[in-house]
Image (cartoon, rainbow, N blue to C red):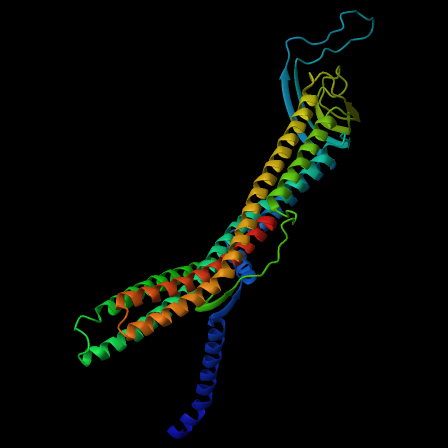
Length: 434
């Protein structure tokens, strides 16, 4: 075959391979595409999915199912196998002589193998209460698991706030640097024309360097916060990805809807059920039983041979002398209930204090924001007039750099107050609904 024909045969295969490689690379690029927009709810969901605690909820469910099956199995027949070998120093004898009758003597060594089957008929309600107790404890374990995930979400809260704050600060720092750079450029032009001394522009340059240092610090902290967010969520986030907080309109009288309250109320139910379990121990227990065995002697104690045997019946047991132990157990459960009630009152008081603090914080920030815009306008006017006076030689470069820094500070404080207000409202929402 000619070389040209060989090339002709191999080209279709090469094109197919190239197409497959291109398709795979396209898929990889699609999945590796960085995220440019992240809502708070999406971040929280990603944290939960990426957390090592994710599988705990499934494990809690499995544990609860196994415990429930164990408790329900008490209603199934229970079988036990026994074996026994014994020797006794004395046996029952018939010392009265009876003409023509020989009364056999029991063996001193006895051997027995038997199986006993018990079927519970009535337990006084103990198992019923234990099953309810298990379900409540599983719910408590699930809520506790959710609270651990909430702690991870709280890290997201701080990162979202910090990143947005750093970005606002970066914009204002860049504005400050540009304003200083413009004056430095004008100063260098005057220096080139011999209008000012050789060192006359050093002050502008030093303030530019200070602004650049702040920008570097800001960028480093921003990179750190974004990397922490990537590690927590497992998402491929762009460094400039927009992070959006949810907005909340809150009422100061909103009722609490928190997991720790739910756990405390469930613990009160646990205390009530334990009190009922204690009282259930005073009720009778009925069970059917059957024994199937083989031994010497069997049921006929005077027969010295190995014999099979069967015994069945119904057994009823009723507690008699417990020295008030059951009543004390019930009383302990009620005392525990009172302790939990006190914890609920204490938690409510503590949350009310925190909520009040948030209400005043929100009120303060709203008042500050009302003044921020006016302050920025005044600072802009002062800076503009100062620049004009500087050009006319009325102010020194030191005074004009101070005016620029004061305007930058006013801008930064305004952005901080806006973000603090947004974050305070969010934290109040989390306080009520955590």
